[in-house]
Image 1 (cartoon, rainbow, N blue to C red):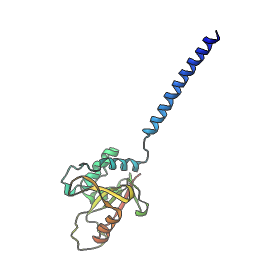
Image 2: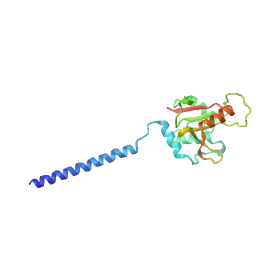
Image 3: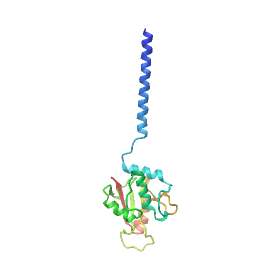
Image 4: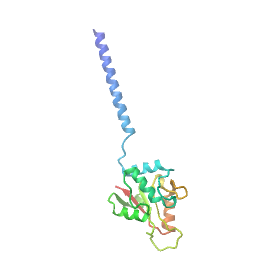
Length: 179
């Protein structure tokens, strides 16, 4: 009689242990596939995953705004706006309540960096007539369309961008965050 009770108790304990193990496995999987709530982190992760890929739909030489819009569609389901024009994208960002301007010193990965065409800080004779836009990645690296390859590339640093667009060619440099 005691042997049967002990066997039943042992069987019950084994079932309980199996249920606890299943529950633990579920909790571990939840942590592995935890939903990212930070919108900028979603943008950043999408950009990192698309590096080296062609996500443009227009000529590779003037595709930076197109690439950013396509990246945003993949990450959020909606484009930034402005089609293929950096100036129209800038005007869209100014009026779109989804975005807020950020001081350069407050930038973080996933932010948009934009130097719009025709929006120069000062009159300057320069060979550069087109603006550019990209996404801030790790360690002040910027992901943007590479006009030579037509791929999303990480060939800019934040310092190089400021030197080239703002300091050398007089473009405005703005940072935008999805809120």
